[in-house]
Structures are given as C-alpha cells and as structure tokens.
Image (cartoon, rainbow, N blue to C red):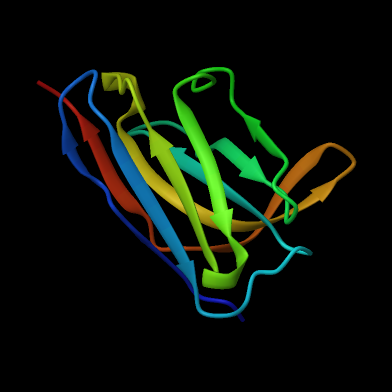
Length: 120
C-alpha cells in the first residue's frame, strides 16, 4: 500500500503563500489521480483540488485562482501552491490517492496531514 508524506505547512500571514508537497512511497504514474483535502476545526474534510495522472486539474470554488495543484510523476510528488491565503484557509491539509468515478472523487489512501495556519 502506498504511503504518502506531506510537508510544507506552517504559520503564514493573510495574503501570504505556502507550497505543500506530498511524496509517495511508490510510483504514481499516469494512471493515478491525486487530491488535496483540508479539514478546518469543527468542520468536515473537504476536497480542495485534484489532478489526474495526465495533469487535468479541478478546484473547489473557494480556492480557484489562488491555489495550483501540480505533479511530477517521475518524482512521485504532488504539490499544492497556495497564494493569497486567507484565515479561512486554516486547517490540516491532507494528500490522497483518489479514484475519479462518474464525476465523483473518492479518496483511497491518506497522508498524515500538515497544519496550515493563516493568521496575523
């Protein structure tokens, strides 16, 4: 089973940027879709962005134009570039292997998460 390790979280001021990384223990080739989720305190985990093995991306409305998901299959790594951060972006961010089925995004493997805090 693939292991996912996230890094890059931290404390940032509103308007700042962070880049999260997720490295997989096994090869994530063109047949593997990946996603970034987040969970704010007291809220359910939500999908932030997804990317197919061929690079097609999709974003939650709340982060469109601010976040960018990308990947390098050769490095088995997925990134989430987060710009113009807002306090409401605060939460634990999780990387996941996902299945894209009929328009639904279904996570199958999770990383341990990395904390992102946006505060002045």
